[in-house]
Image (cartoon, rainbow, N blue to C red; front, side):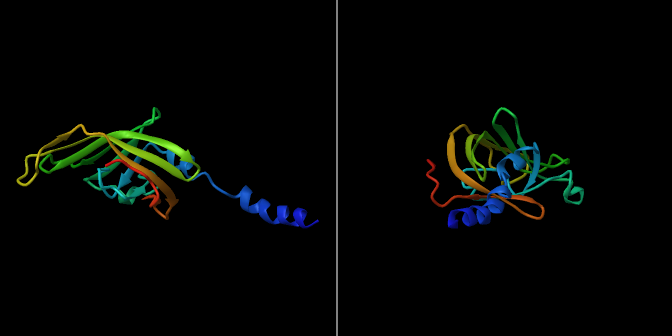
Length: 149
């Protein structure tokens, strides 16, 4: 009888558990707070379709492709800025975690102080937990994540 009541108590918790990664992956373009790079430990994502007021003339965007690849870049319409970008892969680990890997990082631009970079070094960023926020999602690097810098 105790097991029956325990099962009834846990049933709502199990039924309402959400698969944050699948919900996150339903959207292919996100506004972000930074371009994904070798030091990324936390990333904030905003859905530009549900938050059009967040769309600016310049900013960072993350594009997720159905083949498990991503492109992260900074854009500005003027063309007179420093433009970092990265490409890599992502993989769903479970309902709340995603694994990120950078395949290349580039930076170019005509402004003074914009050091040109063309780095094809692959970097394993590790496993990130996906947490929903009011604006979209937050990716947080798991402290136990083993990555190869």
